[in-house]
Amino acid sequence: MKLYFVLIITVCTVFFSKAQQRQFTLVIHGGAGTILKSNMSAEKEAAYRAALEKSLKAGYKILENGGKAIDAVEAAIMVLEDDPHFNAGKGAVFTNEGKNEMDAAIMDGNTLKAGAVASVTTIKNPITAARAIMDRSEHVLMVGKGAEKFAALQGCTIVDPTYFFTKERWEDLLKAKHEDSLKQNKLLYQPSLLKQPDNHDYKYGTVGAVALDSYGNLAAGTSTGGMTNKKYGRVGDSPIIGAGTYANNATCAISGTGWGEYFIRLVMAKSISDRMELAGMSLQDAANEMIMKKLPALGGDGGLIGIDKKGNIAMPFCTEGMYRGYIKSNGEMQIEIYKE
Ligand code: ASP
Image (cartoon, rainbow, N blue to C red):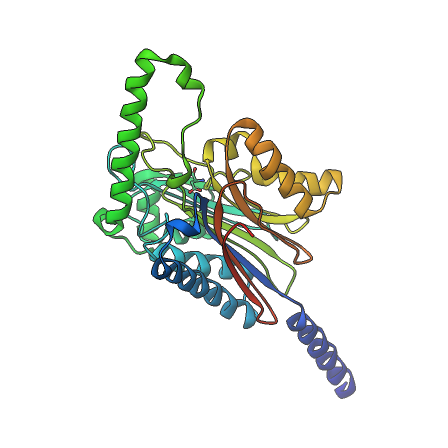
């Protein structure tokens, strides 16, 4: 009996230490867009890098202690939501009506459970509300006042909408409105201009994270203020499961950033997962095909981060740059902003 007991303990110890030894990886993004070195001051770049590093380290700490991918994703995103440099949480972009309306989603690749919020204006960290919906409701997506009520009942931090204000984003709105009015005037005389795409690049800045934990589970999350000057009630791709956010242990975890309407129309994240599952493509090939070919072919732009069950990473984008980075279980960390 005693011997039997010792044997079980030994087997369990070996099993759990093996699980602990398995590798984990966290990948994050802080949005894609026209991010040129020539437009960036050294101070600003350092601030972006510091925020991305803080986010990676927050997630790493969880994974290193044997935590789950879903927890690492949530923690990494919260850091970026709290940082005013990114278009999520504090620093979210403004709608046409001068409000901050945020969207977020989270998905667990192990259970295919997901939670999302859209058009919320008072939840300090929308990703925590998405998580609460996933864990503690029978729903996947809740919007507006209802989502805010649920979040408050679940203990998410509620703030006054003025908390999200930043001067830079307000100026982006004025710029976007000015460009819109110029376009409207021109259209009166030159309807052919309708066919020309807008410059949407400076309106991005969504944040996201994907992770593989030491148990082999994948998770993805995305949080955003959407796009500057978006019209009343507009919801982007970020909270749409399968468009801007998706995770499935059988294939990959994806978080997107870019012109959301195109990500929705392409069912971006799920299309990558399907290419892997049904056509046997690698994550890199599937992500490249969608971001570098299908997205621009339709007239959209943006990028994404992805990770597969083996820990392979993809971070393609068809814009000038994308704030991005990863950290692996051995501590190897990389943060990039511009094109190679
Ligand atoms: N994808 C987001 C949206 O369309 C914008 C972004 O990536 O910054 O809402």
